[in-house]
Length: 165
Image (tube, rainbow, N blue to C red; front, side, top):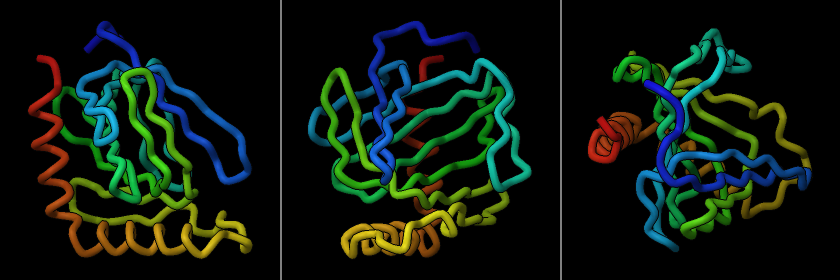
């Protein structure tokens, strides 16, 4: 699968402690103020903390972002086949042609191809988290748990529609 080759966009994650992490991604779709889809190819193996999953070198990540949802979704593929989906609970997402920015709310959800759902990092939430952030987390978890199958179908369909061949 190769590395990023098209236009790039910056994914900017701001953690609750104020620290910032940025990732350079390949732009697939950008609808400013609404949604974006990006692509990234893993340059080395990366174990997923808290799980037995290892994203191998060459794994394609297709990131799906929306300004009106309390989460981002990452679709991981190896050889064109789904490895897993990963929901990162987030708020304050903004999207423009150069950057996707959001506040990461710590909690993540792994949706395996078997349908198994693993909620990750809840124990890392600070006790002082704001009520609006607790609500966003609860909403995202409810969506993931009650609509995992629909979400999986939506993300796989959207990925196929935009992924370069």
